Image (tube, rainbow, N blue to C red):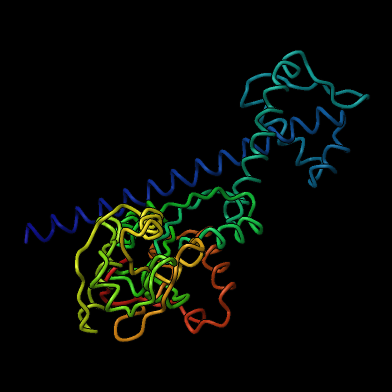
Length: 337
């Protein structure tokens, strides 16, 4: 019985503390707004020089303006204006305080304008990730978004999907161009289907895919960089009964392309490699099982972010015909890229 009563009292105390804190916050906000309003009345009256014109400029009655000035004078404990037939004239103390009051009012106006732009998602920052399949698409989506939202600062980072999933959950990234569906609780929007292609040197005899793989080393990325692509390649080889003579690992797609051109080996890469392929390469579309996967954008919908939502809408508008553009989804496990 004592424990139950103690628990209830603790709950009531916590509840009361929350109410008190909320009340104090509201009082602080109200006082801040009141003080800004009083300072604005001070600045406008100093500019106009009489109560009637200042009241009209502030869209309040003259008695209301008089009340605001009186309240401000009581707060600063000094007279700011001398009243007479010629209107309101600044006192010596009023003249000394006016520049600071003007600065505060101006800064407040700038702050409110900035806050409005931030609330609409037209100012701020967004971090976007992209991977192997989207290195051509992602920058173009960024460029489209920047045309509509020039005030938003953007960063674009090249990361494999498994790292993007983690950074999306930690809010280090706000949107990621990744394999979809993601293996974690993220919203996603499918954009296109990527496929595997075989890349070989152009100055070589014509051979089948099986011959290329058994006669030349297969150039691959390290798992830290291309875990998902490597898993896709392994599934393709296994499901289609293909074998490789040897492998050689490297850090990035550009190096693989250069090594293929040099005749060191062949590579299995995403179709997107066609955007950077020099004429010294031959690209062979592959057929069979496990040659394709979905690519899209993913984000953590549990966090509110107007800029992110604007970016998602911009990307979705660029893919009006894709079946995934009509709905945002969540997904089960999938290998990353």
